[in-house]
Image 1 (cartoon, rainbow, N blue to C red):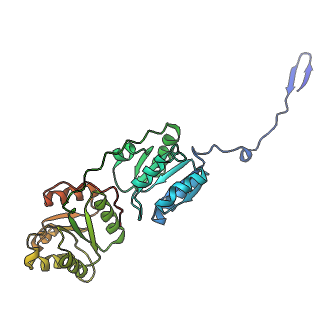
Image 2 (image 1 turned 180 degrees about the vertical axis):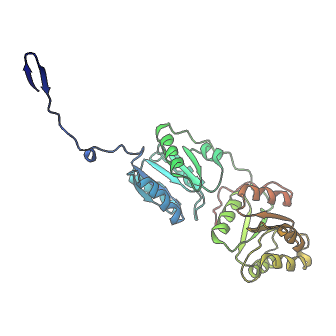
Image 3 (image 1 turned 45 degrees about the horizontal axis):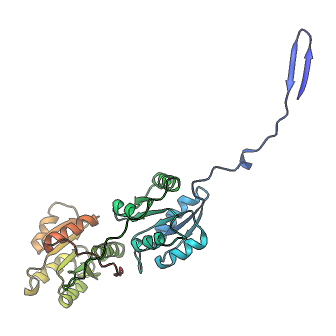
Length: 300
């Protein structure tokens, strides 16, 4: 410090302070500096990764459920973003395995799924639950909450009910859009149903004749033979005169519902179909609630 003083004019003080350039100062990072994203569709996983990388986090994507536990333990990741609908091992099973392993039990898990089952997810040990597709703001808020709140203990699983003598009802899902087909199939299987799939009307008719399903979910717009014509032809056969057929369509024009019912459909749902609503309609037409899921089953 330097001082200059002159009688009658006053004093001047001078200081020298170190200057730290703004770019050299460490930017405040997001809560959690590393993330393991468990998501099968690469595009969805990459979108979540981009959100995290924007805030400077290190991100690893793991598309295979059975590998998550070892990967998380090896990486010592701060948070896990988990999808529920994956081949080979469902997200519910992955979450249960993570919470059963002492190495990964403390790691907060945020479920991000098209399934809206928040209460079940939190009860199973998830720190937060988001429905796809999450916004940046929603994801960042969930991360802040998950990484600052103590993890809730996972609820103890209920004892499995004794296996019934009767097999679960078999549903036939006719849907040419593969993401829609897979989401509906996995969700229905998680509810305990057996599900066969067909990708067009001709295949739907062949599957119906071979398998004799308890109920048919029929997409209206399919290549080759559309769902309305497939429904008409099935209704013309005595074996399918009483089989419940639920029409699924993206059409929402006046008269579409009537055309579906006139073709022989029992009910009509417009896309995008709520998976919860789909299960409710299936249970209504089968006259029984969904069967209890088999813990040993794996989604196809």
